[in-house]
Image 1 (cartoon, rainbow, N blue to C red):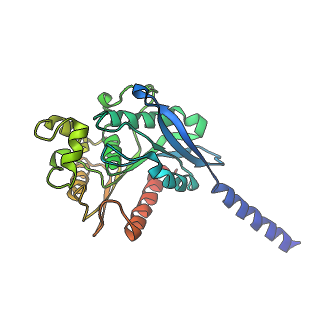
Image 2 (cartoon, rainbow, N blue to C red):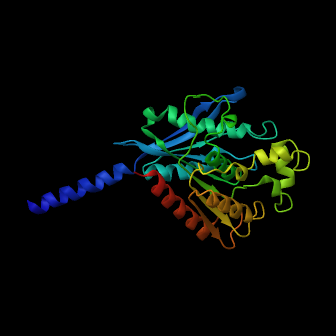
Image 3 (cartoon, rainbow, N blue to C red):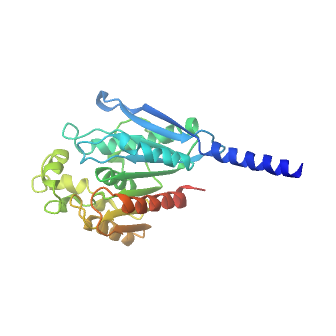
Length: 285
């Protein structure tokens, strides 16, 4: 009888663990509709939630002119398995939509999470963001402009805050004025998003650079960057790290020796391990 009870308890424990890892994945949820664009997100969440969960918003890269939200579907599922509500969003792209349209959209995404906190059992005080390349720039921008009204836009849920609790930035640029000559495609990409190059539209480049918006109120940040990145030079992460540190903001720079733009193999594993640890430390109760 004793052995039977022990087996029953063990089976029950295993079943609980399996249920805890079960997730629900929803695609194509409209979160904002600027200029009749009907922007969508995909959402992954734990099937069973006994308390409010932290949330993570994922933002794809693509030089502000390309990319799809599905790029982050896999990570959203993995985050949901770890107890997060995770979403990946579509945002408006250049050249049709220039800065700050993309900023307006991702801020609307954060506000949507808070507006739907009750529905999805989200803790509105624990929202993190992660993005790569252009998406890394946008998450860093979210992290340093939480209280800047001019970047909120009119994407809905204006009664909600767009502040984030923490940022994971995969090789996103911090100072767009210094991208030219250090990036293989900056001269092609940035004028499409900013209306011209750094000579003719310097003020736009400054306004669009996270580095110039750093204050002591910025969100804690994890910067992930390779030394051999031909698209966003590694020094961009160093500048961001130093500026945040000078403002007494918690920041960590993980430099991956030999890594390029888009991590692979061991570099990808190292970066993802840092991401999970960082989010657990800042978003888990």
